[in-house]
Length: 143
Image (cartoon, rainbow, N blue to C red; front, side, top):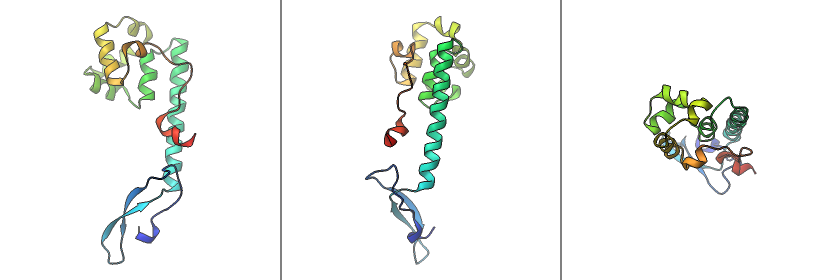
């Protein structure tokens, strides 16, 4: 992309700028500030909408007793079972097993603490879910 073609669309960045590489007149690459790009904003909005949909689905399944609260907190924090297993220091199969409500309800405090620390929650917060999905970090700019 040429330096003069770097997008300057007003987007979700507000007063901030992204920095992009662009080709200068002499053929060298330069860092050029960009106010935003509609294509990126659209892609990000769709990604956050998908995450919200998965979070609302997980919340509903927790309420129906199909999943443990761990499933909801994983989705909201953009983790899957593999990532959470790595952060909690547990095997992936154990994380998947703990997504079952009956198994989760019997977890010892030491395992709950591992999950809580990995998710940035207290053990009490880990065991409950909110009434509705709060605004996600990427959605705050659009509110």
